[in-house]
Length: 226
Ligand SMILES: *Cc1c(COP(=O)(O)O)cnc(C)c1O
Image 1 (tube, rainbow, N blue to C red):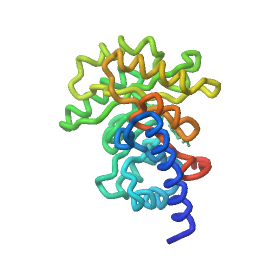
Image 2: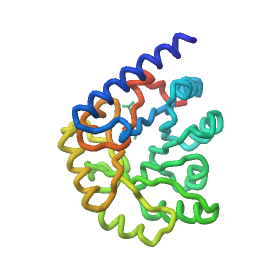
Image 3: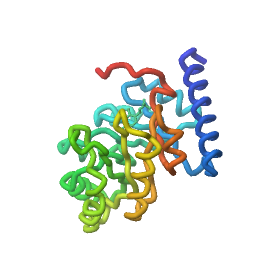
């Protein structure tokens, strides 16, 4: 086993211990929480190591990277697209991603719908929430736009959002922010919460996260993208 594989194994074990501790403290089972290993910018060998260690959920932010990595892992790996969606990339993203965490536009939703109807395929959709509406460049809709957004997706047959995703603003209080998002999602009938990254996944688990997206705690500091 390479030193890198060993390093990943140890980091992953530590993260899994922390997930177990946070879940137990919250009176939840670890099987309620999907750990998505965010492999973006890391080489395919790292994703292969994680696969050997039992990880099946992988997070990617870029269409080209996700498309090329996803064909190199066995087909039971699940790929989560969590980057900003570019309209011209939608049909490609729909081709490799099982789950899209960053839906934030009805125009994009309509485009996803058309591709999926054509192929007779389903994908899982999360709506991205942005708690800093003055920072539109980060992606996501404001929390108070969620009910209207959802209502507008009711006409779709394939694009049926099941949950919300958020990346918290740097200065935000994680617990308070996650609870606010969880409450709003639940009021809208959305049961899945993609909340929590390396710095705040324990608070996310305490607030009911069903999906956590963890990169650097498992794989170390990210190389700069090519
Ligand atoms: C990069 C990224 C992550 C992982 O972040 P870490 O802090 O490395 O765990 C999670 N979610 C999104 C949307 C990301 O872009």
